[in-house]
Image (tube, rainbow, N blue to C red):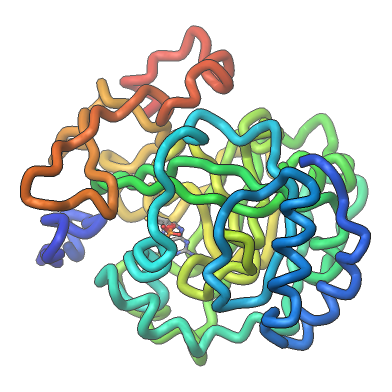
Length: 335
Ligand code: MTE
């Protein structure tokens, strides 16, 4: 059975089953506030004053969640000049199958996700296995705002101002062994708070993976916020990955474990349908999904009657930055 989605046609289906660079010193106080779950109304004016003073974020905060101040990154990426997707769309049109397969489900159901306390275990082929609390992770490096496109394998895309820092900052701290060739990202699978964990859609937990050089690439963002605020639950609170040159499903939400391995990790979508979802999953308009074209995309928010589809760019527009990682590889074979 395929689950039909009203706006897109099909919803990330499996054929067999369903269908800046500057640290804000006031961060410690902010972290305390975030940990206590207090929303950041009092921080609003402080954050916007700071951002203005730094010439940093120009993004208007939605004012819904705790502020997460950041400085505009020099790695903002190819999407910087494009119009941002409305916060409302970015936080109400989501894929987070632990909370349901319809695009509206995560925003409706993710309230039950408990994000405090939160820890992320770092283990495997490293010298320094560590269990980080969210507060430790937030302190590890300066928060940056990076405007990245995220292009979903289903054919839609968004432009979002993410807040976080390069995953490489964390990786350097734990000192990978030379045998570490891949990184596995394990996300939360909690039956009590995630109503669809246990459904037959995927083999839970949702697991993703990157090659070591991909994980170390400065564009790979360990992400704690968007639009100047902490992540909404439906977008993968309290910490997720954003890998902007790969299809969106590589960007695992609500991370609980990062494991360094010598073999490619078995990823959730690859296990579900290996012929449809390869390990690399680089955005590539010349390699179609077996059941649909990847040549064009629909930008969320531009879906009026006369809205034209956009051409999908190689590596989602980040070819200059990441093309070298795949030099000499047959991208039709290693899709
Ligand atoms: N992470 C988990 N844990 N579960 C999921 O279902 N969906 C993925 C990815 N990360 C998913 C996930 C897919 S298919 C996409 S397109 C992006 O999250 C969507 O992120 P967004 O909702 O912030 O746009």
